[in-house]
Length: 233
Image 1 (cartoon, rainbow, N blue to C red):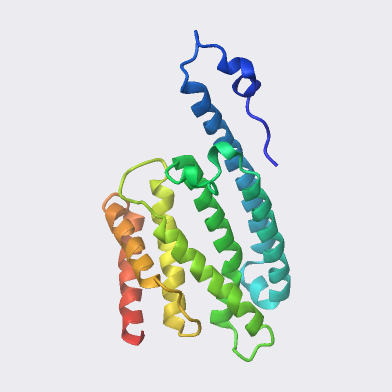
Image 2: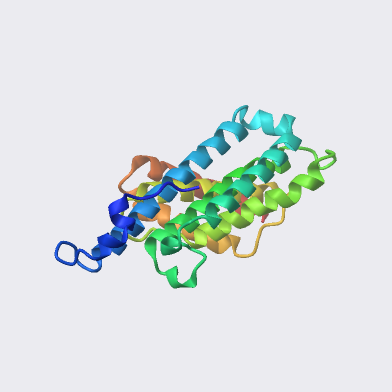
């Protein structure tokens, strides 16, 4: 699943060269390499998912939702496989790494990919008639999309500037829109905590809107939509 890092980082001799490397350097470099390789593997998987599930756009989801369900199942299994092969040095499943930044980045990657492959079913629920023959099968998958949005937003830390700030802010815009679309439709139950998750997204977008005109525009748009939703929810 993952390529190997450079041999000088994994060979026993790397840990024996006390005259050239501090004790803490090699393990940290090894973690960095494992993270780098896990990111490459994730990106390949996500690219495949987008190429397959977004090939025909939203019209493809409406016209062939059964195929989308098959693809979702396949990619869920691929995500499971990827996640199970993350090296122990940065494994998010290990409680030891609760505060390990690299491990938690990978956990967020997992949530992001799962949310994306479930998004077609939310679109389907919001646009198709409840009388549609596949509506009942699509509903739990759409609900899973919303649950993943909420879970991911609760893990968002947009307070400090770092290399992922640009992506986090825009991810917050997307997930806020997903939640508001579901709330406005009145067609699907919202998961517990969705309003608190929405507030996290709004706070993060507001935090950085003064430095990016597109975020400032997104903030105004979200507030307008929220105002409409609050009239009916």
